[in-house]
Amino acid sequence: TGLDRIAILSAPETALSDAQAAQLHLLTERRAAREPMAYILGKREFRSLEFLTPQGVLIPRPDTETLIEAALEAAPDARSVLDLGVGSGCILLSLLHALPEAEGWGVDQSPAAQNASAENARRLGLSRRVHFVASNWGAGLERRFDLVTSNPPYIPSADIETLDADVRDYEPRAALDGGVDGLSAYRGLADELPRLLAPGGVAALEIGWDQSAAVMRLLTEAGLKDVEVRKDLAGRDRVVLARRK
Image 1 (cartoon, rainbow, N blue to C red):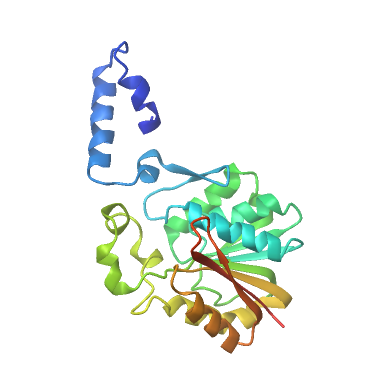
Image 2: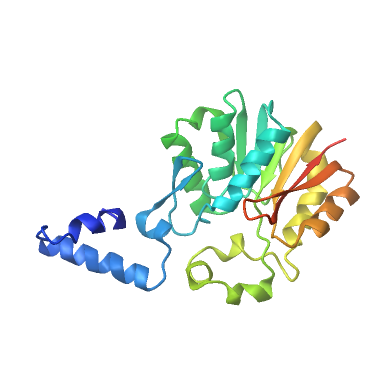
């Protein structure tokens, strides 16, 4: 019932009913208003898995697949995975799909994100291996994890209005706005990661393309080791990895 049916509904040899014509008009108007296709269709593919993407949840992006690949390479035997700011669940659930022995925890303050990630876990058959927590980052978590991931908000506040209308006007501001310099979330994560990581545990954080030096410095100052950066397919810095001593 989404835009993936428009080609069929609008084919010359297809006679549209009044209801179908009205639906086609509505869907076309939504896209003309720059609403993202992922919200119109209600879903987005990520690493060959289908994720529901209701409004109010950050849309999965191909850049984030770099984080999955880097995390799996750095922690191939992880048995416990924590994703801070779980959103649609695309990071955590993709990792659990690739790590059949692992158990996962997803943290988010947004009710929309909690509902979407839980439903995506159910649809992917992963509900028994995942736990969702309503919290502000790692607050209240008492255990340690082999792998901690996050795609935090990292766009400087002043840059939000310069984003494409598809992003600026529709995606949740809390998942985009990283504070004055875009690094507010990373400062909080740097404070919490030494407590959340098991000995030898790995942190994998998505970053903006020009933030690697600043984020690496924050993690090094927090006492983490083996801090390094990974590039995305466009050759831009995209993920910072670090390990607990």
